[in-house]
Image 1 (cartoon, rainbow, N blue to C red):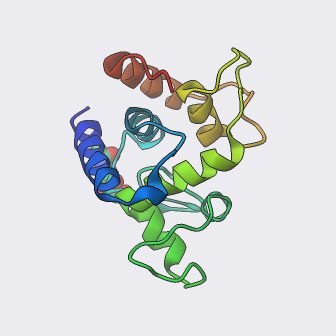
Image 2 (image 1 turned 60 degrees about the vertical axis):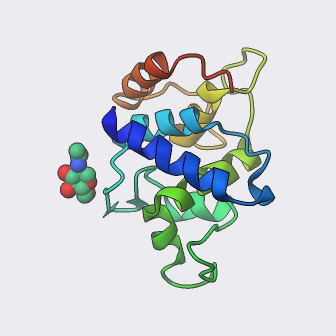
Length: 153
Ligand SMILES: *[C@@H]1O[C@H](CO)[C@@H](O)[C@H](O)[C@H]1NC(C)=O
C-alpha cells in the first residue's frame, strides 16, 4: 500500500503540472493506483518480463492502441519508445488513459462506466472485458478499492 501511495502522489503531481492536453482523462488517479496495485502490486521498479513491461504490465499492442505516448518527446516510431514509456510511471499511466479513452465501455452492465470497468478492460482487454477477473488481480484490486473508497469513476 505504501508503494501505491507513492505512486499516487507522483502521478498526481505530474498530471497537475501538465497542460490542458491532459484534461478530461477518463481514469481518476485513485483508480489508476488500484489498477496498478491489482496488476503488479504497483511495483514501480518492475522491468520487462516476456511481453509485458512496467508497473502496469503494458504490452506493445496495448501501448500502440493507447496512441503511443512517449517519454520526453521521443518519437513514437523509435525502437525504444514503447519500452521507455511502459517503464516510466507517468507515461505508462498516460498509456492506460489513452487505452481507456479508446475502449471505455460498461463491461459489467451496471449502467455506468467506472473503475471496475477500467480495471476489467486493463486486465482482460478492450474486447474481453466482460469476462471473469483472474486472481490475484481481482483480490488486489478489491482490497485497494476498499482502502481508497468510492472510486466512482
Ligand atoms: C519489483 O520488480 C523488480 C524487477 O522486476 C523485482 O526485482 C522486485 O522483486 C519486484 N518487487 C516486488 C516487491 O515484487
